[in-house]
Length: 141
Image 1 (tube, rainbow, N blue to C red):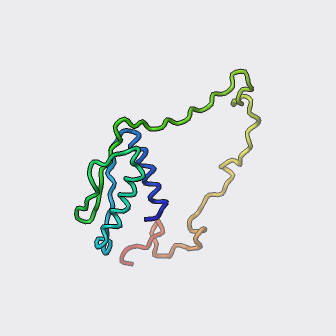
Image 2: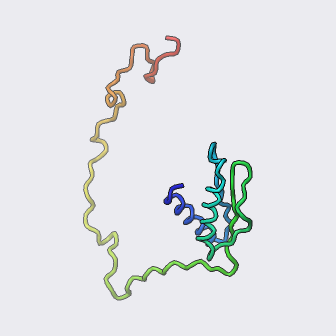
Image 3: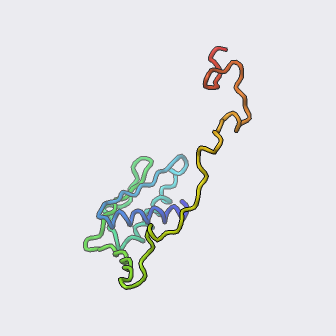
C-alpha cells in the first residue's frame, strides 16, 4: 500500500470519527496476498497505533475469508479539535467591491457568429454510400 493512499484513508477515518461515526477498516487480499496476512495485520495495527488518542478498536484485526478488518469507534470523552474561526471583516475598513462597483464586463464573442461543429470535418471521415442517416452502416449491407 502506497504511503499517500494510507494517509488519504486515515484522514477520512479521522473525519468519520470526529462526526461520531464508527469505521470498519478492511483490507482485501487477492491471489498470492492471501499467503501473507501479516502484511495486512501490520497495516491495521499501524492505523490503530496512530489513532490511539482518537479511537478505540472494538475488536482485534481478524481475517475472515479473503478480508481482514477492524472496527474503530471514537474514544469516550475525546473531542475533535475545532476549526479556527474565520476572521470577520473590519467594520470601519474599506468595504468589499460589489457588483455595482465593478468595472465594465469583458466583451465576449456572440455565439451566433461561430461556425457549427461537424463531427465528420473533425475526424476527416466521410460517411460511406452504405451509411444510413446517422452515418452508421446499415446492418447486413
